[in-house]
Length: 463
Image 1 (cartoon, helix red, strand yellow):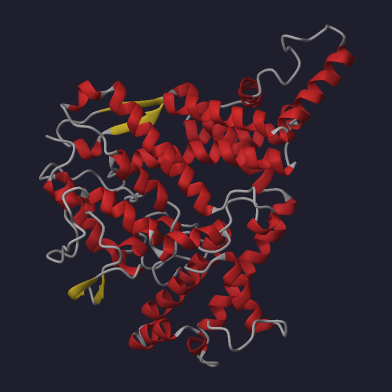
Image 2 (cartoon, rainbow, N blue to C red; image 1 turned 120 degrees about the vertical axis):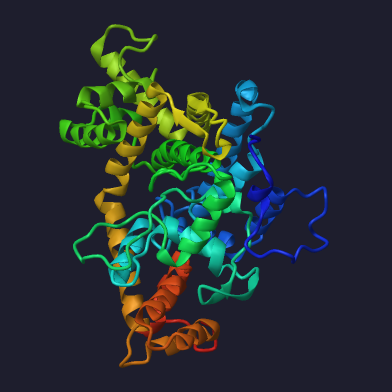
């Protein structure tokens, strides 16, 4: 079988092709363009990656992170096409499709990232839950204002961006429906909403081409897997770079981490690698990453004090010298892309496999987990996150208030959709959830201020 066939290029809404569907614009290229020009894509510029955007123009936000993931995903595809072309029976991985998946992989994240995600999930546990990846598929297949079905499908005529089935499949990271109702104590559930079950079923029908349906949880396309690896690479490398620039971390401080920090990282890495992983292995990996920074460098003199001062200076230079930071990041990204392995599945090419080799996986996981533990769990970052969690929760409660007619606070089109579902608590809640999830960090703060502060925006400014 070829890597791509006609079913991959099909769209949920058919028969509305126009002059833009010229021969020189292949379907996946058109999808890439639709994504770039969408409001949901633009709004990522106002959503935090690690450090709030107002702190500095240097730090990455969700938009710039997604652009980097997109480029890395396309780079992985380019390398696999070069090195494994013989295995693909004349096919080539579509790099632009992988890039498109990278652009939208975080498009479903609400304001304030994972903390906003948890806050919305708490409010939605009786109504189908909330999860960033599930929201991504919902935005692409329902919420983005590009196309409508001629007749409602599952009671809804919205068709989102009307992307190709293979493009929609490229964001389906978790092949698991989120239960309609969950207990308050239950953790966040990863997957897709039951409201999008119909589109997931259609994706599988088109892409599997009559081959046996994989077990629940095992459907993941080649392009989705490439995007996932690219996300891990960008996350592990560029969150570290931002942390070095911000002064939150220095190589010398990282290499001098106490046993408690190393043990916490080792536990998380061991879970990801599915084997025992020790603190000494964490430290050894970090020494590999910062080779030439710590003791034992080629220019050591043997004098402990002199060498300690020299190592401290080298550490400071890496944190403050943009050339050196960029060189480190570039070399790590290049190394990690080279560490991607590939297996072509001739019976179902869409489900071909990619994964990191053991050494690359170890380095990526250590950097990811160390940065998460040292930065994202730090008190300075947690203070901002706490505010975001509480703010999102407050917004939901205000808009969901029957007593105070909270739905009247929403924009006209959202309010009308809420009223169209009056009496159906699940759909009312989902309408509110979709509205809040689409907010940028700044807009969420501004909206909250208009409800709670006498310094809020003027009434003459639109909601």
